[in-house]
Amino acid sequence: MSHKNSGNVDRRLLVAAHRAMAAYDLLAEYPGRLLAEVENLHEPARGEGNGIANLCHMPWVSIDNDDSLDLDQLSVAEAQKDGHVRIMVAVADVDALVHKGSWLDRFAETNTTSVYTAAGNFPMLPNKLSTNLTSLNEGEDRLAIVIEMLVDAQGDIRDSGIFRAMVRNKAKLAYGSVSDWLDGKADIPEKLQGAPDLADQVKLQDKVAAAMKALRHSRGALSLETAETRAVFKKGLLDDLKPSMNNRAEDLIEDLMVAANGVVARFLEHKGFPSLRRVLRSPERWSRIVSLAAEYHVRLPNVPDGKALELFLAKRRKASPDTFSDLSVSIVKLLGRGEYVLEVPGENVGGHFGLAVNDYSHATAPNRRFPDLVAHRLIKAALAGEKSPYASKELEIIAAHCTEQEHNATKVERQVSKSAAALLLEKRVGEVFDGIVTAASSKGTWVRISDPMAEGKLLSGHDGIDVGDHVRVRLDKIKVDGGFIDFRRVF
Image (cartoon, rainbow, N blue to C red; front, side, top):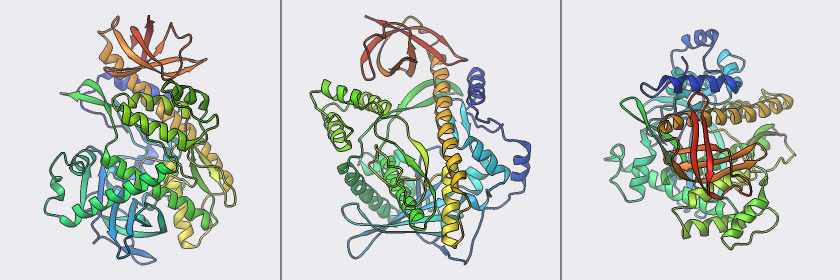
């Protein structure tokens, strides 16, 4: 089986996951020809000469989830004499083993993304690659695409470049322990003890990332705090669904990746290459966002304005940090969904409203996202002085498919999460919960509760309410297999 589950997951949850994958046109199993192809891969890709630098001596580190094994990127920082900081992000050169047109590539192009569910994961690439041969594992030499940025004290990128190199991860770090250390809540992580060069450059990365974040937010990037559900298992059995909030170390990596992805977009444009851009257009329901702000006695412009919205969000975070997550969920729903689009040189397809950036791609997670793998092939062709390996029409088709499959993957993850929540709520039918409206349209009204974190459909009492409204609901019925959780409003 292609997925890896957590312990002895309830069989109903596994069945629900496989049914959801099939229902949304995502493959849950690798075909035999792909597995045969993988059997012939025994070593990670290596490179010498031909413009490939050897940077294995540098103090590279990875910072990811505690249990992440598919390590896509490393980072390092170097202070310069003029006060600038050189930031380098090394991204796994997955294309070196997953060649265009191979069975591995065909599968990746079909699913386009890894799918992470409460029942287990369905990786875009088999674990032999994504957690081994193409993962930037600690202590291993790996081939990478390196994105280099020269950043000033204000967080602005003064110069940038992209090249190929061999790198070695000196320390596999985890978000939680790094964040607690940076916040002064815990001792230095064990892997940084006795390694002052690693510790100092992680602190420097944090400083630069914070400056980058502050600059983007001054331009209208949005301060949002959304909670993702994380399945908690005890002795192999599902015990709870807990919210998982971003922390300082996650913000650090996010800010570096946003910057690196912008460099990739501008690099390809400069080279005259078409590219896949990641776009979030102006909010679909700005008028409702205006109404939500008005409830807090804040007047937003009638036309979408990122700076005004960010000012409102920053004030609400400071005024009521305990409820800011609920407001964030509402804003995220009202902003709409991101999409992949083709951009050809000389055209401007728009930027990312939530990040307040105009040039944005996805190129930093090729083990789990197909658009990133495509970006690497474009980069390598541009560096080699070759023509684009993809025609513009081909990229246009890929963009549309990746957008669709990303949405499908989200639906699978959400549906399996609902099945997991239904398992936890089986004996609580009839109980009353406090909730917040997360969606309201002709297709139905949806409410999220927090204990456990779960979302369900409101069967009655939905007249006159909209996204962001707080309601009391009674759990009416559930169905584990289909992930159905139904509420009725309590007045």
